[in-house]
Image (cartoon, rainbow, N blue to C red; front, side, top):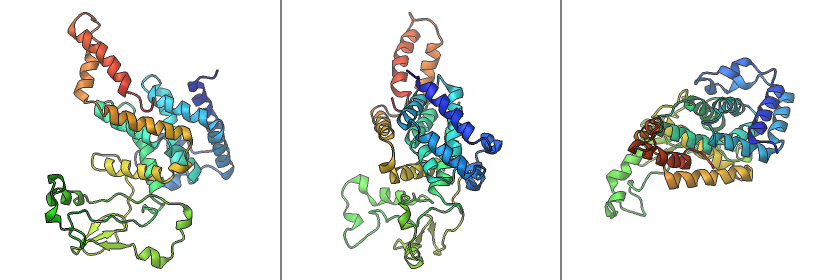
Length: 326
């Protein structure tokens, strides 16, 4: 029986054969590269068809193998790097089917990203974040750097309406002050990318969504920014690097795009999505200090002292939360 690693190796080889004419610069793109989707034009239509055939050949076995690699990522570092490099290239493709193939791994990539941050393990963090950046800049945004469809966000319950009075809200968790804090963010999450038949909205219909007044003189623009003068907020929304301030917008937007196409994804990908969510809810994210203590204990080599005992318990704990979809 063919092992999962052999399936991944075969897929990488076939992808390489299908895109031999692709520029070698795609192998070593910087973090700012996903901001320019046009750089993925190096492959021809014939190569695109070959890539689609490669990704759809034994699709269930391939998807399972890649998810297994994510879980065993610490044992197959080089193979993981090559897979992430290929997913990065697919994420920047102009063909939506190829981007969707990479998008189906987004929840697991997000889990790996958050888990690596929590553990202070940055070995493969940059490669994972490059794929997420490519998905954000090429799947969520259009070539001009704007969200693919106009979107807006309704005010929170802190804003008075004909249906309620904020002062009458009882629980402290719904106090006016706590709700106002939700509106202090300079950016707002985008709406899902809906099917193509909504792309033919008339100019009048699109203009109706350009600005939503929030009741205090400010405007919620279509790109999600708050503006006091009603400006259109036309600056590019491309993000070059994942930082503490940009990570929430990138991850939430990628998940929004994932949710928009969730009905088209393979059943195996949905199964691993459930496992990913279940593991995150059940175990959460460990603290870096606890992880470092386990690492020090595992190197002590003395199974009779107290640190050896911690190492034993740490091994079982690590196997429980270290994967991304087991």
